[in-house]
Image 1 (tube, helix red, strand yellow):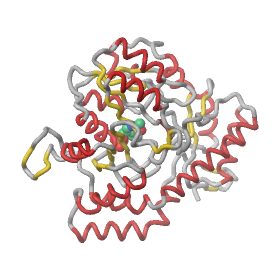
Image 2 (tube, rainbow, N blue to C red):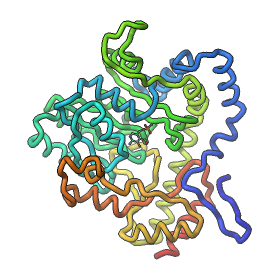
Image 3 (cartoon, helix red, strand yellow):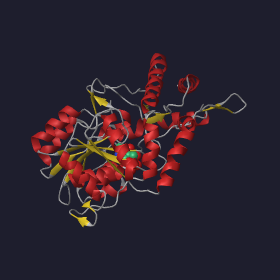
Image 4 (cartoon, protein in one colour):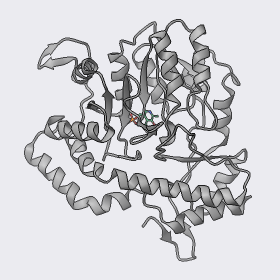
Length: 380
Ligand SMILES: Cc1ncc(COP(=O)(O)O)c(C=O)c1O
């Protein structure tokens, strides 16, 4: 139970509470950790291999390559796609920093594009339009933000016309589907994060790249160990982004429960939509687009022009919320030298002013949802 009663009848509903999912698994996880300790194999190894196979089967993709975190997964994918200095990569401006940071880390330049305000994801029309202005574009990274798939068909069509690589950033969307097809096999490569707050979270950092290509799978597996297929023979210049054996062992245990945790998130999102939708409030509720056939609700993000006041009201009521994300990437201090003016990507900028993430994690109960919804109602 995540709900605590403070004695005055006041609930506390944190944005995220991992105890309800981790505590029932404690014995199983401790056994997995003990087995790793006894094996004395702490980097990659049998557990990482087994977890890669489990994930590939779960996601329905032929290859899954574990690595140190979701940011490195993007760097590895860009390196495998041959992206480097002088190249440009199209990214949505409304996403977590790592999507663009990875582009800069390989020496390429991000081209920031606006989003579809209804899904928070890359606007395919903006991508099509950018193609004419950016002859050095070599790849695009559509992000499946908050658990909902980006509109991949038009993005894939534009990319195919120009010969670009497509890397799905699925850090927040393990299990999401697009028009009935699982994400993570739609483009050339896709990336995952197992940061603790993700739907499948490790006890630390971990990440993964998936691909349908046998050649890319070999290259990715080598790039994460300094470009080696054979020990001490460096065919490519990679870096160290190995997955910890302990994280893989823990994630293997947790993966067996991911489907049930995802269903709980979906139930919670549906209840918010039901209660808040019926209340007719001046807020915009997130509604999956027709192509988002399995939205996995890593975040449940509402919009309100009075977002900051609403956040303060919910904080006073003991409800955890967060602003994902307060500043568009094209207006981040480190990217100001690229010259994107304020107002140049208006949907992304307006979204940053209006969004508020509510608790939606799998440990919430019906009373928690009603309490959060009631607190929102009482604000308006
Ligand atoms: C959209 C997106 N991309 C990439 C990342 C990077 O993942 P990590 O934190 O595992 O490096 C995250 C994680 O926060 C993310 O949300």
